Image (cartoon, rainbow, N blue to C red):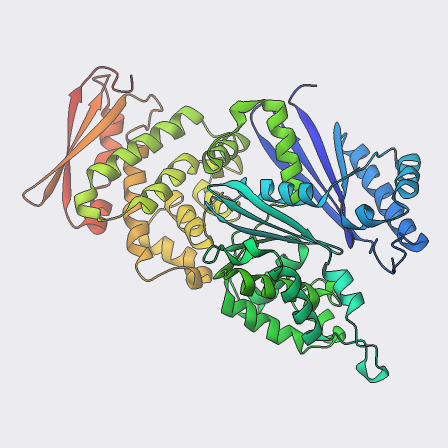
Length: 516
């Protein structure tokens, strides 16, 4: 099969069945569908560890609906996997045979180690953290991994999840009203997690959370603090913020939780038990913060398939791969964008003495330069506005929400006044010094764009010299006729002075191809 295909990944968990569908083209991929159904497959499994008939029927009905979506979308490849509930079920073979007969899906039952590995694989393709713990809370199990230098080092599948903990630790007393025995859960979790000595040996690295429970805890926190961006991926909570959120939800009734903004109603009765897993793991591991990953097991399975199709050339820096993928998806003129990025970085390096910025700002500039034209795919008219919206709401690997906002503002920059207008809803994300940083990076990008206005790459390189309060910018061109580029670059004098406090002059030098 060629690389132009649609790939569905179905994850049959203990609480929820989820399906994602990716469109794969020659050198790009993107998500085109994401659906889930709460089926509570592990509900009432009991000491006999069997999937009950009612749970089977719920799961089969959900899978039938998923298959209809696959047929309507002409999906080429389906990757179906099952996790804790099926893994633990004594009637596993009988259940999976019935699933195969009724849906034609042959589910692969993942081991606990495999489940942890695929979650890890999803995480490292969506984040750039060099080391950390990952936690994937399911309904019936929780997978914890530790990775260092972006390589998996340890993994364990723990035999408890948000649903099974809730069932096991409900107050049996009539006056208990079904509330959870919180102290008992904490004691049980601390003992179970601490028994894995390697978890307590790696203090100081972040905990990266994946799965519905973690996303819901983060969404509740965003609602509580009126966070301006509705985005889970790369959202960060300190240990204190996790504790505060847990203290808040632990004292609410299930009815109150069902009405709580940010919390899915079908998780209201199991969210506290799930949150206690996060809290306890952070205590045992010494993790100072919780980072939310929008990628998890399903994305890990997809990336494994993607790499198998594309071969070893698909591996590399996940941020670089993500930027290239985004450029192709939005139909950006690749060579022009790369050349603008090259000129932007050269200007940044040559102007280091007057801007005083560091490596992280250099990276943000390079990303903004590569992606500044994505808004044209929406409409050429007001493309800057479209670029801002697209980049603000795109999961760019490894960027915090603040950095993603800065990239969007630099790429779409028109004026300081316009930036202030665009940032009004997002002031909570920015630092006081960010306005000046954005202004400096924006002017550099505008100058680089001007220097390749004809999309010819004639201006190959630049050098800058600061003398007597003025900057002399030498442009090295392989063509003597760069009047268009010089005109547009020369029109940025006022913006340059406002950003850097000095004027510039342009000088041309003919050169051979400096890219060779």
